[in-house]
Length: 312
Image 1 (cartoon, rainbow, N blue to C red):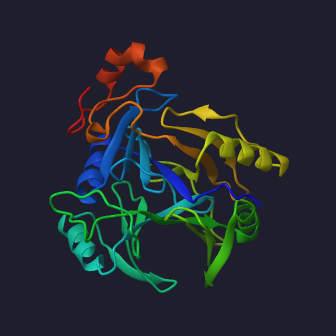
Image 2: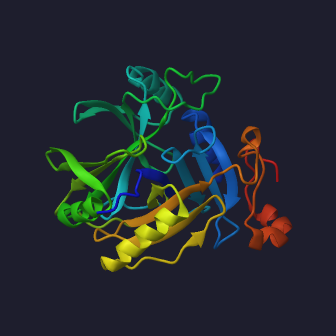
Image 3: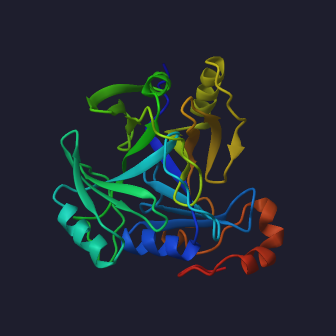
């Protein structure tokens, strides 16, 4: 069993509009835009990062906004819900806020004794806010005070036809089953970061999901260093998983593999972090391009949709 996994690092999804995406996560949910860059393989598409003040592992939600991409279809083989942690007693604040800005209906629910508020984003991407004791320092805005602000990820739901192979994989990765409730099995990694829970939802007869706007493209797990990552890569390969080589993503190093359920997993390093090319005060304010695309900056800037508070 691996011991290097700390919990979640980031979650990356697809969107249909960069400006709508930017407004919803920066202004409605009050996350900080910590980086505005582009897709490594398609520089005419943004890669937007949102999180806490510095983008600590376990707080970072990222998006590839492909203009006019078709809506995804919900089903199995995907991360179905991304859940954020909020302070105890904050659900009334968030329910009123989500209703007031016309973001859709917010539904209070309960899972494993925790109060949740479930709602949808601009592309029908599904989210939950979960009341939890969480001492992480939040990013705040003028209208979202610290006593209600999002702390980071709480957990992520994965929809699967058969939970057993995923339980086996996650156990190998250092998680253990901590609770069950109906079709939901919760796995938790000990001694990790605060984003240390995965909920598997077993749906034996559900159809397979289809990727599109509103879909999670991949979910990333945190390791502290490149040495830890190489140990994880070796162990997964020895266990029969087809793991990629290490990819330099400027702000972290990444490896990827496909799980038995079809969900794409990434293992990402916490180092070097998002301040390698911007200081803390300036994070997310300028368009940052991977080195191989810098020579095309003028063309790239012409194709990208203007975003509020972003300098090209």
